Length: 383
Length: 255
Image (tube, rainbow over all chains, first blue to last red; front, side, top):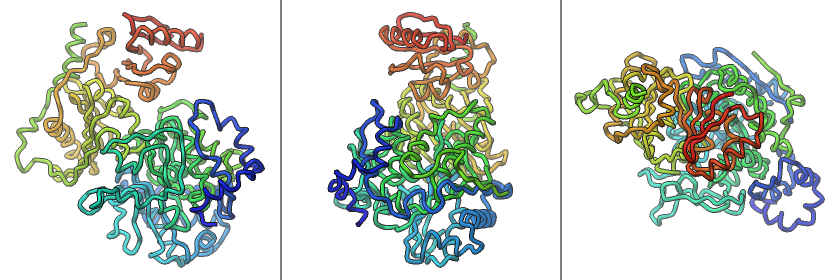
């Protein structure tokens, strides 16, 4: 079945829905269906049969954390250190002795591999070029042609601003859903947003919250209304996704793998930040374009932040000097969340962890996207 | 109390500039390498989820600049807010571990690689990539330059009840914060939130993060009644003693 047809599939299999054990579990969970929560189409996502690549991927609950105090030199992440840290992570994660074999467990030369980076906080707190560069080098060493590698995010402009350019990454595609032309316009000659061509309107996250955007805002949201459409980068362009978020907070919670994917892959997001922030982080990742394509998560914590996020406030930026790697985005998020909360407590930002702050992790676990229970996570620490 | 008022007026009204931005030599003028403007909810295009806090304060416009000044590179963000209170409010949300230097000038503070200030209706942040003393010295000059270019003079109105708690010589950045709704108030003091459950449109001045006093303007007698009922429902768990002023002012002090 083509992924783009999955909503049609759902409508034809309504009878099967009631028999799906995951749906039943979700319906009876107190995490779902709270009275004051706007309705969503999460059931549509759950009803799509999983494939063998579906989250949490090859190693559910397994997380490797590599720390190297020398990974940031004079405020700049070290490419050499990032390469070595990533290599150690990959070998430990897969149990392989050969790096090429480790990578080939996730990708093949036939794949179009999308690297989902995060440039939203600007130059001071974006996915580092050291880590992205290390991923690209190791992909190439594993036989993945450069032309099959795509660096992407929702905003092409922000990618360029932080240095993800064709000049810095020759031969690699750099693309985003929201984009402008060389003259700085979001609109083509017909007055249509360029980004409209880059979203797949048959694949969407519905939430019963209206997005109302003025002329200034619409280029960053692509559309208003109650639908958030998936980017074609995820639905069509790439066959595998390697997720490379940053270790940072968002207010009292944290944003790593799930947030980077969810809010990075759909349109019309501002309406989802209020009542549905946690739900969106978890639910959007349960839809096939994300659930079935993300093969690896590499949380870049060489430089991160413990407060002031998701933007970059210099007083809260710190060197965690760490990489957190796993196929399971929920487990990686749990490990990363605990690192950030520990730092927040040490810095006096908060006194203790508030379980409500990581509700999205519990929700994603309940959806079968990974393991959020600390006692069930198999964490390997190196360095 | 008069002294305190005068002091706060100096801080939050007309800031005393050390440098005359308009008197800069031509060769000293900042060179703008890039400039982007985000109006209203378009702020989501700049900072995504971080926008909610700014929008709660009524954020109007951001001018985000990359500039070169006296040989150093800076990232300057100029946030136009609807009032000096809101400019001070959003500034006060960002002063954790920021060394205040606002005696006699605008509220401002410096942390490694960043200078922040609230000037009139503007909240301005200047980030520099070089750790040099020159860059640190230039940051307030840039803030003043861009205030002259984009800002409006204005006076934040601080309630007398709050002002009377601030002594002459105290740094307002250290003592005072201002919230404009649930996101900003919970960021500053989450234990007060049961009192404003279900309410909207309120604002609050917090002294010492709420440890000394939280002064909440609930805007209407009806909202005050609801807040008092909320507090009654919270019972002994609510950590503040309660008094009120006029028809809509709730004053909370730590028990």
